[in-house]
Structure formats: C-alpha cells, structure tokens
Length: 174
Image 1 (cartoon, helix red, strand yellow):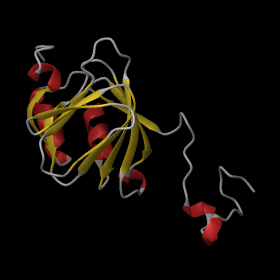
Image 2: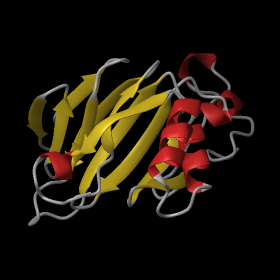
Image 3: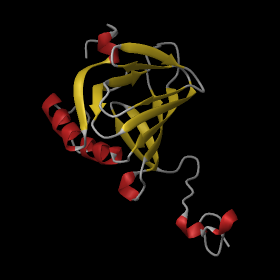
C-alpha cells in the first residue's frame, strides 16, 4: 500500500484513494505570467472543477486591470502584503486575509511594497480554466504584444480593461 500511488488504500468513509489526488510541497505544474510563477495544484485541464494555485508575487509584477467573464477569482495571502484593486477600491491584504472577486468585476493585484520579498498567496479560480490562459500566454513569449495578450485573454474568458496597479499608482510607466 502506498500513500502516494493510492494502491489498495481507502480514505475514511470508504472513498478509494485512486479517486483522490495528493500533490506534495514543491510539486505541481508551474506557469508564469508577468514574472509571477504560479504552481498549479489543481486545474481544469486535468479534470478539476477549479484551479488552485500557489504563487509568489514579486515587486511590481501584477497583471493589468481585468475581468473574468465566468470565474470567481479568490486570494488567500500566506505571507506579505498583497494590494488588491476591486473596481476603484484598493485594499491591502496581509497574511491570513482573504478576498474573492465575482465574475464580471474589474480587479487586479500586485506587490507594491519595495521593501518586502515576493508576496506568497493562494489563488483559487472557480470554475477552473485559467490553466488554459497560462498555456496560451506562455506560447506568446516573455513580452507579448498588447493585441496578442488581449486575444489570448478573450479566448480564455478574460478581458483586460485597464492598466496594472503599478501604473495606476505611478510606480512604473508600464
């Protein structure tokens, strides 16, 4: 019997271990967007109903203001301070803080504190599918053209509707 393979193992309540998934620390597919490495622990592309990612957000690396047409975008901060914009409101989330943005609501996030290391956060997307966006984005290379980014976003249910937080706050030009 092996806890990692599930052979001949039953969970409490009788569920078969073969129906479960265990992803160890440091394991999972890694995708990057805008310099943020996200480690997918669960993803729609592998049969999950949601995407569960752990990321480390470096200083001034967050995405442009955007809207998910069908997904709720949820953050739980593990370490550091993550600044989140929801519509026109800015909120600082610290370790243990949680935010969830419903579909159709403009939002973005970033690490805007120069004196802190990358912010460690969990990102949960429901329903899943952001893994497809990351895959398509990765095919564009490190510096995608704005039109290509917009096309990949629209193909994956994301509309970019404004600048990144670093631009809004005057911390960077782009």
